[in-house]
Image (tube, rainbow, N blue to C red):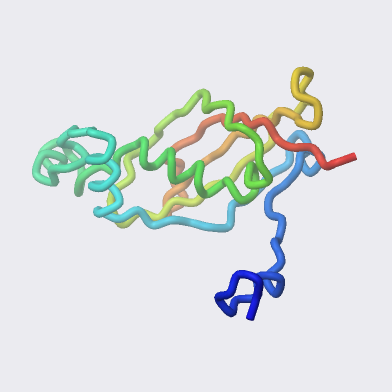
Length: 165
């Protein structure tokens, strides 16, 4: 029996550190985020209704088709949130506050069933003056669909932990 009394020995599953530290990034470095994500109709409906975005383009196939789309258009904010999520493991999983997204450009619509992938390039990095032990890193992320078409690009900035010295 273990100290928790449940028969589960937590020491046999050590914690594994994920993510990169400030020192792991260099200007111009390209990170290909290995996970892609197929966005489903239910993802779009759940996200749009949870955020109270009642735009018929995202929820009404007949409306979207009447405006030249083959199906509903996936809520662009869902595409952005999914893309940020695809990059977390490589960019910010080691910790540090998210400082924002700038220059988000939506280039083409995403429809249910489309799979998006993302690649990020380090634009800049600098040590934080006000927060010792951290640095500030900005990346440019490009998001493509399964046909290799650019659907979104943006800049993202995070405070990133430095390695302990």
